[in-house]
Image 1 (cartoon, one colour):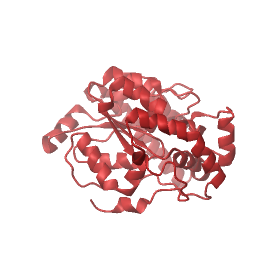
Image 2 (cartoon, rainbow, N blue to C red; image 1 turned 180 degrees about the horizontal axis):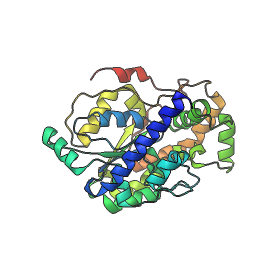
Image 3 (tube, helix red, strand yellow; image 1 turned 30 degrees about the vertical axis):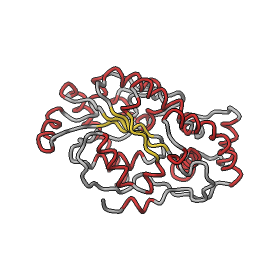
Image 4 (tube, rainbow, N blue to C red; image 1 turned 90 degrees about the vertical axis):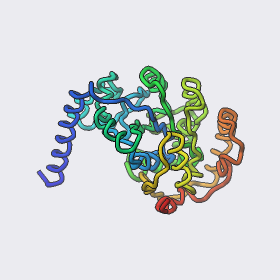
Length: 316
């Protein structure tokens, strides 16, 4: 057995023991009232890191817990490791065996929250999982236990989001072997793959967001234009803290989960997707009351396929 394999087994063993402890102590744990819903590949990881760095925030066990949703053809990352999968209580098809005690194990102890509140005047914890945006089951489950929830949603140019999502599977994870053009053709023709490979579906924001707003009310949502976040991260993070009732303190703005692109998108593909998304973007504007300048860049032909992430390293 190699050193890497030994380290991996030790890591999984440690995490498994921690899960056992967390599950046994779940009665003394809190539930989140803040939820970062995504969208996928729209800066949610970077927003999460900034929130987790706030002194009043107590982090959860992990980002993307994949516990609330029940998505069709969805495979959870926990399934790849049998012991954590068993301890986390998951069905064989990747859906969570939901229960408040099982969910609570991922979050801080109430005594830890009280201690944090004593030091900083407030304490919060959050569930940051962009997969929840697309799942009606997650909407209903949160409605059942959250008394005063707040939601943060970052929406990116749907064309760029779809391509970034594809590129992550094609370049980094090696889970996608089709070309982007073939993916677009398959989806438009109704030849659907698993949830994670439905790149256009995840970029049609309006029906998913409408379901959440109908369930909880518009005032509980901070809707972020991802392009504005990429260009002015300090301002957007400050707005997020104010929305959550947190002190506007300096935090790290280092980016997370930034992809590298091997090839640019074809101009004809971008134009085709622009025409496809135009009516969906208009429906989103009507839902949110957005003016056209609030989604600036969404209808422009942009050769730059990723945001200027260097600005995220500027000090606030």
